[in-house]
Length: 295
Image (cartoon, rainbow, N blue to C red; front, side, top):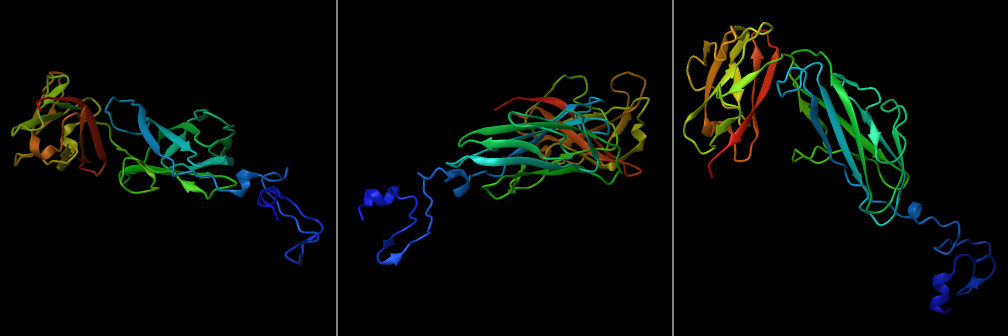
């Protein structure tokens, strides 16, 4: 048989090939009107990155506390050569968060009553991306909770379901987590400077004040649990800090010091955080702006 003719053959209803009867045999191919390339081949949807950001910080602590709002961003990309069809996105929220009504958006498709039902994204063409945003409010939670985590699922007709991935961790296809703190806290790094200038190569120490207020007594802080910076440095002094009113507001503050080299702060960092617990075990955390200097 002529090879050109053979490549265009889509159906044989009566006849033989190499002496074998092909009566009634249907051979679908690209020229058959019923042939659907997208369903015959798999699309390529990789594990979509899912990030989280604190977008409403009620107390200005720089950390997520009850009442604060987190925003998730999911970017779905079709890296294959065929369209992904009947694509949906679903998500199981962390039980310590509540969906912000009408906060979900998608660059294509129908949001519907997400998260109760999946977002219908329809058809994603090769090389195309779809971005989904939605927000949750952090609810009151027990002092044992240290993270809120959740993970979404992308499904479709011509590819296997894939889970979202937290791009800030080395693990693949893992849930996206945000650190949360039951207690509200404010800090001032290098009290009196705004922002604090820090040379990561300095061999000195960094003073950090945990600020007291009418709503927060620094004497309730369990000093043995306080750490500072990306490397969770411990206070340098045996007393683990001292009490003074650093901002002259009439409320006592807890001042602690940390070795710069132990803090984990590197060139380009724009904030540093303190974490710890109250004496009753309530988790605490707050961040303050910094500016790195030096080479």
